Amino acid sequence: MSKLDRVKHLTLEDVPKAARTLQESFAKDSLARLLTCHVKDPKQKYELDILLYEAYLRQHIAKGICLGIGELEENFETVAIWSIPSSIDDGIESFHTLMAAGYGKLWEKAGPEGQQKIFEGMLPLLHDTSAKILATDKRFKNKGVYTLVYLGSVASARGKGNVRTIFEYMFKNYIDTPNSNNIAYLESSSPDNIPIYNKFGFHFYKDITLGDKDKLDAVEGDDYAVMNVMIRGSFGQDWTGSATPDSLHKL
Image 1 (tube, rainbow, N blue to C red):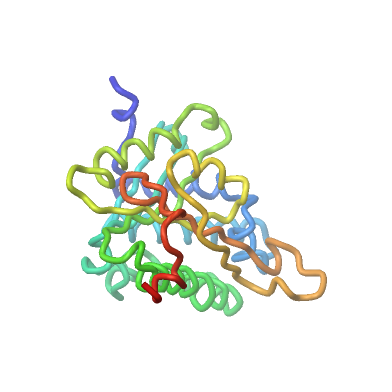
Image 2: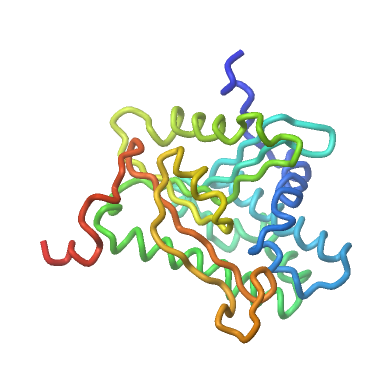
């Protein structure tokens, strides 16, 4: 059995286990902490985290791709959530899809502060950033876009090569198929991951910030989170040496 055979396409039945994987993986992540730091009760905070990941999973199982490696009794070793070039046209952001995924329940559970952070802060920021980059930077226009929404592993899985397996599976079966013209896009909330993603052909594009970084004595994870936008060119080609967005308008 090849290592790619370990990859499982997740179904709705897998959502609870996959959500627990992501919750454990991102428990100390600055963005994840920022979204729920207003919730002081640990149990309620955990439940809100789970609702968020479950909603993302259902949404992308319906209109994207969700993958898992190493199914365990309570979770998976590794889980990845991707949107695909047809996701928008297929209705990934439609009211029906969002309600079926559980975003209505997430809204109710989040409370006013959580609603502002998640629904008025994070989701529009991530959507608008990617839309602007892909629409205005001619290096990436008219290409199919695969967006890595989440990629997380539990502690016991690290060092097993699961991240490489996820990327190789996606490159072989979707992103780098013959005669395709696809790019891959992600927003990482950990600078430690930049060199890891570099290994798979991603290059840093820009930083974006959610929250108030300029606040006096601002603390990352409590007041703000920084996300590193990274993009992989078609078939892993390095796009960083090509014309910049500013110079493109002068060509």
